[in-house]
Image 1: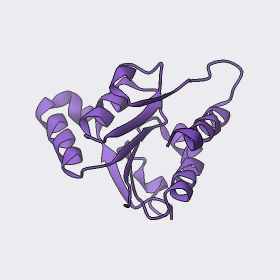
Image 2: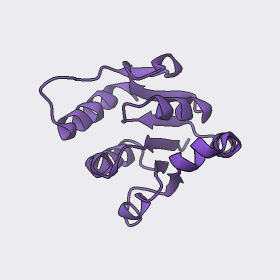
Image 3: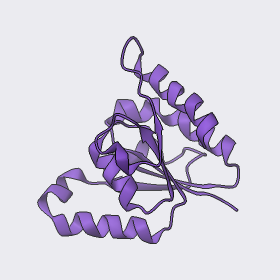
Image 4: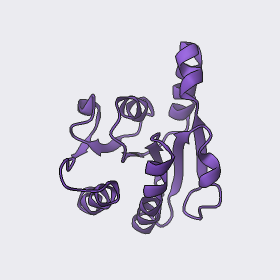
Length: 147
């Protein structure tokens, strides 16, 4: 069965760029998967030509703060896609909540993230002495044994 994967990376542009190698690793692991990435609105152009991404969903945080209805509509549309796996390489309460609302049976993220009880698989977050690139690769390595 082909996996329908949702990866939520709503950090700023620099962190998004640091995550690009992770997309390749996901596609290596799940060769016939469909990978959709949720990013901050305005950063999606950086990933438009990425050969490992099948779909991009821009998230307008400012708009959602103005309208709770738009936020719930966004969540409902994600849920309708029936993702099987949700990956959260970004340490974020909002991302964890969106991942849970997606309805994916498997939701992987950092164990110390806000509301990590909403995750089905948790990865320890290295906190000291690591650059963000190293943290992302640590996440990738840990994933190899988890999913």
